[in-house]
Image 1 (cartoon, chains in turn green, yellow):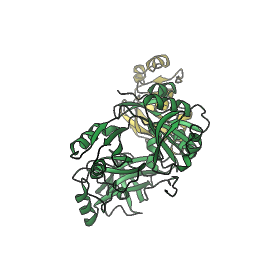
Image 2: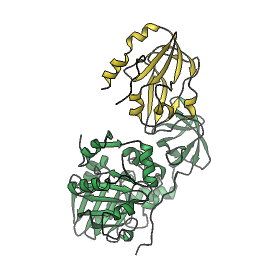
Image 3: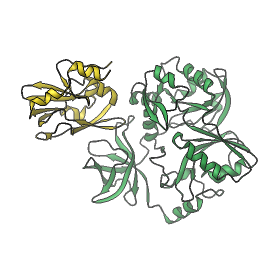
Image 4: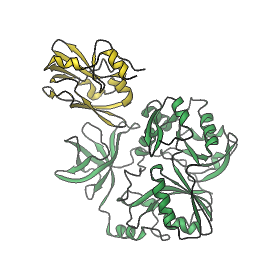
Length: 365
Length: 125
């Protein structure tokens, strides 16, 4: 199994480890709920060094990334970050990712760890443009600092004016004297930062951030998943797959059908015109039990969908789930049944944002 | 280090059995609750349900996943711990006090195949 540069620190912190995307990663250090609460109320730091980073450089870098990506790359400013998908010609999703624009001729793509090889092959295969793609995943380490106290904590490690780093922008700065890339982004629904750098620098910053543990806790993949789930951020392999389009996943905000051409656009335009046949909806449990990925959803005898992610939401205490539901059973308030180990349990369709996001959104200059 | 209580029988799948005459209380070990993490739901069997040795009789759901709990012995459920319905976290707090079911054992000789406290302790080291 692969190890990130922080692996020995996870072991020293007595983490329960788990295999994820070929890496031996921390699932939890204490408890998932405790770590979850730290991020909602104070701050947490995550090892996300397993994520993939591709660099795209060259004269036609903008054209190329725009052609790969569902969101509008042509209108990006330098040092802006954009969320979106790469799609197959079928409209299904190769991966969801962040695009960092350094300048017109230089971009960084941050992709899911489990998809690095597939994504890189896809990007290389479609590169008929005047630019060069490189997979830097093994050279770049990454940590995420998330939570309402993230800015106050990071401020004690840098002289950079963090209040000027607005939501979904990035910059190069010194943290603890180490030159790193920092973006105001994350996967938790809270304010926070993602910090990219060399293995040695990221290791030093991780240790330094955790020096005073009063307002910050190391957080594992367990809390990362409950946090993203509560604010309905998708996880590739569950809410997004090769068979699910971004529109069905409810991600039309990151699909710019009016902007330039991109792979899969024709199918998505048609899908939008004809109307969706299914979509990701929220479900809330009315009976007792926990909803889990893969459980089938029924309306009477008819199968109408499947759970993609489910938890007893740590922030709300409610048993809720994201599920791919056929229309018209996705209407709010619709009563449906879920098969749990052979027993039917009653659920109701609800809004899929189980918890409100707390991003720091300011006017971009 | 996980706690192991003397005088109980243990299954290699981390359930414990406390014998009282022809009856047995069944729960999960400290090692099991620690491995599962925070327990958020326990699916209980019903009184008069039959437990078959080695077969699933209850499901414990942690934040992360659902885990089947296997019957360490054969018997008939005479009592279920209803408290776990509203307070599943009791198993985390004290896994040896908070049993899941009480069964009337069918064949007490099945106990011979289970581990003693010291044997179980060795198995989880």
